[in-house]
Length: 410
Image (cartoon, rainbow, N blue to C red; front, side, top):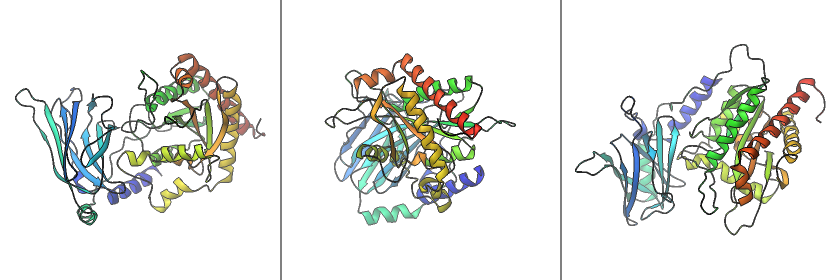
């Protein structure tokens, strides 16, 4: 199953990415720290724009373009980004904005959102010289859409993407397997707190919580617990679903935080989501749309996959799975509600892609709103996190006790 799924994913990527991305980046010297990106500049106009990043040492790069929306993707070896806090929020010329981060262990990515179709005129890295740092330079030129598409069609071949092998189920393991899925990661930071004096990324908050929850569940000795990511790596949404299915997971828990933009009102408390074609309310639809765009943010949209994989992502085929998902969600609402503050409508549904495995009961937990000061204080409180983790573990115990006994939901 695993080899076939990854092979199909490789074929998919081969249809999406150009050959410019083929050559592997040169590895860092043995034992060396990753190079540091310390500053960034964007200059130019609507016809020609230059993007420059200062680096502590020279690295290899590979670039390609994508349309709808128009993007320029720059892949690098792993880089430590120490750019200004607001870097990327505003662009200039052909670059509207940009984002950056770790894509996978050993690899980083920068994605430039462009105002229209562009051609990569030049892309290179200069050695450090005369007290000046090494510099990554990408020069873009505006072109017509037809010219863009013709150029992009010239080279559309890419060997299968390197992927770290998932954690394997130990031989003889008979305990139920639970997959914990900390949202976002790497280049995709998720939402960020807007409170004065804070700059906390959702990806870090949910990873810390998931690691704590993993430890609590493992200490019971009842479950085989694995994670879609255990560090600051980007994992495409489809890969998260495949990961759970490849490991024959019996429960999938995706962990996120929410936020409301300034002027959209106030909301607080935790929510539990199950999958539905039709969102239970407008806020649920908004949140699902934001979360489902994570793969576009990474520079590669994996939504248009071959039929056998697309079935995993969009089908609601098994009614039994939906029933078990809802049963666990109700257990969560009951147990979490006794320990932490819940949203006024705590049980919701929406079309989250990470919940679309047809044979793995799945829920998505929104721990709270980073746009709410009270929730943010809780999310950064060790005591609150431990209390919430205990409640989730209690709901997990109730769910599997019911399933293993074959009895009705409590």
